[in-house]
Image 1 (tube, one colour):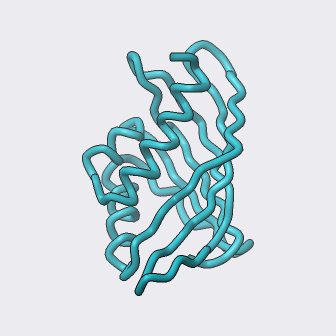
Image 2: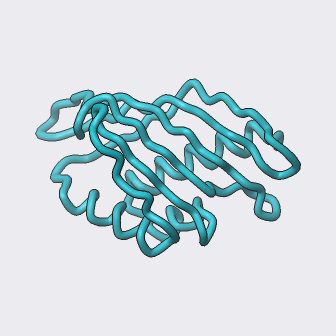
Length: 135
């Protein structure tokens, strides 16, 4: 698998793990020392959330507050290698909600990721989520 394909797989695994509440798979997307930041609709920066414990608390708390089925659709992935085993990846996010038989676009946004190779796979070392609308 090429570097780009491996990183695309990481981005997809993250989205699928969150949407299915597979917390074990989600934590595996991050390095142990990873950080995550979030900005919604140009507001204040949330985070950094550092390490598995803080990041997973954020993910679980966010999921617990949702009474719909979410689908994170990641597209337009651009990968820029920055050195051996490291890269920056940028992609679009379209956040969909399914509730009561209706589909709604909740928000769009971007992911900006620092990724590192960990054996045969890649992991997120830093992720910044920039949402265009509140979710």
